[in-house]
Length: 186
Image (cartoon, rainbow, N blue to C red; front, side):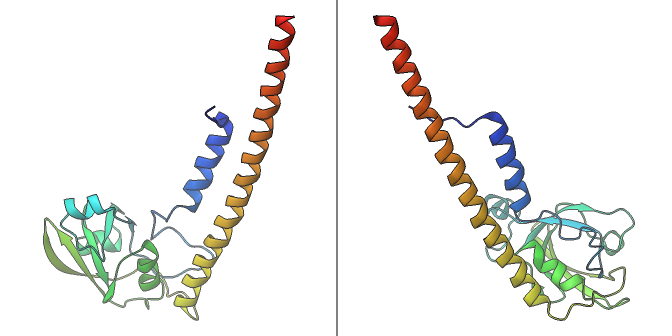
């Protein structure tokens, strides 16, 4: 018998998965952390996107949105560009961009190495806003990753508990069905 989860459970799981998925916004407002921003949203790239955009296999974030009039827009960044490096740091995960941009001092120029139409270019952007007072951006990144791993394990355990409950309910329903079928035969 094929198991089917209730629709409400599927919606809940989809919502949880979207919260745990890698951020599609590397430049979202961060009121509690502060820090510089350049006005872009980036996303990680699949192997298919890498092939399509002729991006290298070991780096690159796809620019999905550029804030009109923002620092990246003024620097010439466009939707569809592949961000290879920011401030000399290879861009592999969306968090890499935040780690470079947020602590940038106000007025500091950052080089952006992008790929557009298969050709590499270098642009300069000046982040807006004061630098984030982070003591160690690397440690914050590790802390976030650990939190996601712990959160993921907790969710896995909750899913296992839900699966056990569903199995128990299915067994109970099967027993009830067998009882009814037996009663109908007599």
